[in-house]
Image (cartoon, rainbow, N blue to C red; front, side):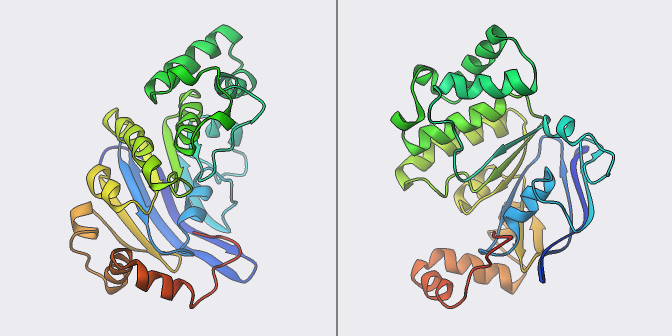
Length: 264
């Protein structure tokens, strides 16, 4: 593996009495794409949110680019500028145009002047195939287009690492492909990416490694052809079989309550 860009050591996270993460150790190399898969409530999204301290770990350490985010004295805002985050929901400002959605964080956080921010916005809209939507408002865009704008907004900040939390889960199936195409482009460009996803085809084709989580721990971590194609653990095999049999998944999802906090 290349030089570690993300290092997670003995990470724990509890919400009250609910221990969602139970000692995660994980390294992601520079330029590596790691897809995190697993059932609902396994801790995937909580892990991702701990990487940029949107959730405060109960115990453990997180390093990004050699800087410890969990150090009480760290300048967390400075470190977060190096981390792009794309959520399930698009979180665009409805009253602003697409360009304004991209330039506002650049000007407020990076202190770029208006012309420079607009230039960077245009470049990144071109990258995600939405240059013609620069003056549109989010309400006029499809869900897939809004998610690509959200990716462009994150890229406009010049991140060294991109975190994706189920970026296609809120989209209609016919809109998923364009978003995944943008993520494939970023992988080809060498962006370090940590992706929580249920898109097994994407994970198999794009990921350098796949991490399977269940019950707040890493059960398997390896190449896609091993974890998805020939899983070693029964829990992994069971999860993948449910994905291939949606009827069984519905029955099992209805049998238990989803955690109210620390979902995913």
